[in-house]
Length: 263
Ligand SMILES: *[C@@H]1O[C@H](CO)[C@@H](O)[C@H](O)[C@H]1NC(C)=O
Image (cartoon, rainbow, N blue to C red; front, side, top):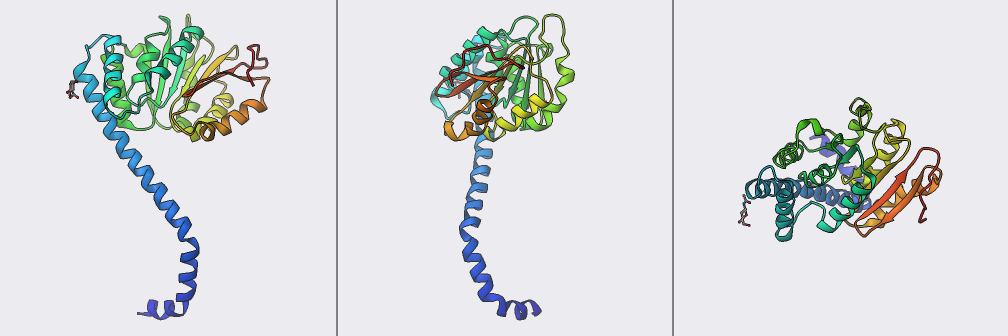
């Protein structure tokens, strides 16, 4: 009762404030709704992609796993990278021949399998996935493709939490490099710049060179603005190696970049 008594004189003010902010509030709502929809759709997509690949591929055969993914993506909406982007990733992996690879965002394990099949015998993949269900299903697909736990490690956490814990996984071993020599970012583009800064800060990038592959699915310019600005501001450490429609490759080298820069 007292609430009504108090709020009646305040009514004009309440109406004014809420109409003033209603635009902001509704924008917030639609963002929250979009986020929730993406989350649900993401889960459904992961489940159905996993079921399709698991039951239709030949277990133990990498090529069959990748073909089955491509078959699924050709007929269903899918979060996996397109075969063309996959070929650009393959080209980078063949050129770099990385021994320590970090993947941020594993979706259904498609890119993880693609990366693992091209690594040298001592090569290792660390893959970071925020969503536990996606991480679990992705890991199962990697095993279905015939890879062993000694070749990869799945970390189920946000990239921001995972990066400071990477060092123990990167102890130089026989045949491996001193730090990461390939990083593939395919998670939330908002995290690309903070994660690159964290990788620099933690000194986990191989000082003699690391290729960073940035996957961009849409709104390329907007997604990459922050990170490209950072790269251009540090020409002594970074250059842009190549730019495709769905992927940009940057090259990091501590102190001195010798690769021709396209900027
Ligand atoms: C396996 O593939 C067939 C034919 O493409 C498809 O109809 C079926 O739904 C797939 N299995 C699963 C579990 O998705």
